[in-house]
Amino acid sequence: MSAAASISPGAPLLQVRAVSKRFGEKEVLKTLSLDIAQGEFLTLLGESGSGKTTLLRLIAGFEQPTAGQIWMNGERLDTLPPYKRRVNTVFQQYALFPHLNVRENVAYGLRASSTAKPEIAPRVEAALAMVRMGDYANAKPTKLSGGQQQRVALARALVNRPQLLLLDEPLSALDANLRKEMQGELKSLQREVGITFLFVTHDQEEAMALSDRVALLKDGGLEQIASPREIYAQPATAYTAQFIGQTNVLRAVVRANIAECGALRFPVNAPDGSALFSLRPESIFLAADNPSLSDPVKFRATIRQQFFSGSTELLELHCGGSQLLRARIEARGPLSGEHEFIFSTTDAFQVKP
Amino acid sequence: MYSRLYKLAVSLPPLFWVVLFLLVPYSLLFAHSFWTTEDGVIVHHWSLRQYSELFTNPLYLTVFFRSLRIAASVTILSLLLGLPLAYFLSFHAGPRKELLYQLVIVPLWVSYLVRGYAWKTILGTDGVLNGALQYLHITHEPVSALLYSPFAVVLMLTHIYTPFVFLPIYASLEHIPRPLLEASHDLGANPRSTFFRVILPLSLPGLLAGATFAFVLTLGDFLAPLLVGGPSGTMIANVVQSLFGAAYDWPLGAAISVFILFVTVGLLFFTERLEKRWTFQ
Image (cartoon, rainbow over all chains, first blue to last red; front, side, top):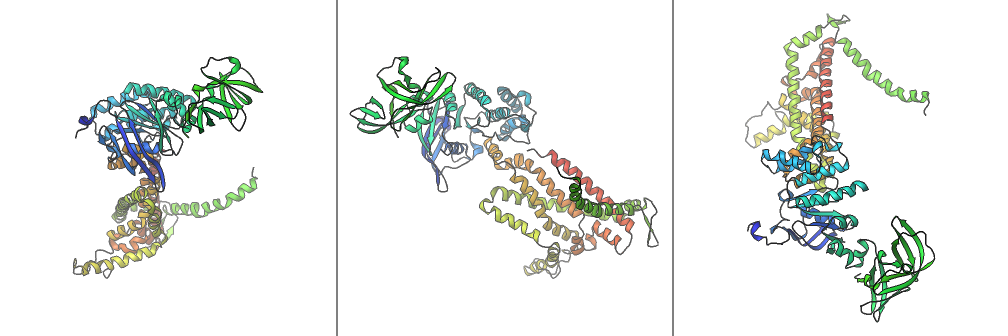
């Protein structure tokens, strides 16, 4: 069966089919399934230990799955050794070869795959130009800054024209400003080359900013996979809601379609019993501002703390019981005491525990 | 911070050591090499006679070049044994790594002399090896060429110096960041290609250190030729020993020593620079 014959239009480039991975007693991935579409920028997001790096290493071929299969372009991938996969990796610490200069590092993959000699030099030059490192072709990696090493690592991977590029927290070693800059470069680079990117990070902001879709991993399982906007607006679980951006998880008791949580009471469409609701801090407003909201709910709360952050301020509210709420309002100077707040019931949506 | 007296007190013992055991002996050696003997008595008469004797008498040059050849053979053989051993231990030994490492090191705790005599019993005409060969009907009478030959010297010294060669190679392999190997595989290089393109270049400092060990130690070795070398396996250190001993020609012995010293120091200087150039991290 040839690869081309088995691809139907719109078929996923990579399919992770019920993959499990154990290290001794520890189950790092639990029957995880995932599709990556052609040309997409997919981010694996999760805390350390969530299994995101393990999944990346399984796809690269550095680890073998305990169970399950990985397919790429209609062909079995997980049975191939890493050097036979059309997948390249940008490593967390870049892993540039210290004994080779920048040009030799970038040419490494082309030489290894015995690409025709006259083809190598121009492709290396083009790759270096793409990441704006042409001037450093003769430098040794140890003489480069973190950002420059990062670019070389990208060029070294991309020059091989992989079908899938794996990026293992490539920005985590950079300082904040450079990180932002490199995020922008990565995104435009991905559009430019049209290669499918699988990006691993623990930074939700980075994931949201870069990705077409975000796959949130928790304890070796897939918690939710959706576009950044969707996962933010409609988190399926309390964990997702808290991990993606900030949120208030309201532990409420529902009786006759009224949820009650401390001093908060709001109408819901849910069966009786205890339930969790997510309410984003930016969905809570000061009632004095008279925001126009549909189905508004008012409540009184005491301001416990106020954190100023430039254009907005974060308020920590106490509204009876043990429930603390966070509200993000427009910057307006110091506030204290009891105030009336308001939110729309449509912004409080139920999440699974 | 520390008083001058204290500094002086601390530096005195090493200074004393260096002067007494290095400076004085080397000066004496150097001086002797420019003196001569007359009727079996050393006369303090400055000349270059010993050096011209050293470079014109074919006996000394023959033995010197034989020593170089033996040193080169031992170096090459112990590299050929030490490198695969270190490679296996560093990359493929798994949980047995520590145990195997100790097993490689254990021979270093056994006296050099004991190991020399062991080779004598193995290689001798009534030795273990000849016994086995005859038992298996591969030979019908003892092979006397095994013992008392340059071959026996090379064999014994390779056995002795392989752990010395193994150690620095192993250390340099252990220092190679493992992500580099993954990066190499990731970029399409198979294990063989990865060995030659990444592992070998990055272990060059260790290889060089090991090779220098084996070469320099063999070049100056005196016990192995004495025990298993025989007349055809005599090395330069044996000549020096006999000149200082039975022949009582200290000036010539000193001249040869100074010559070997310069060869060795020159070699060390060269390999050290090379090692620096090949070290990347």
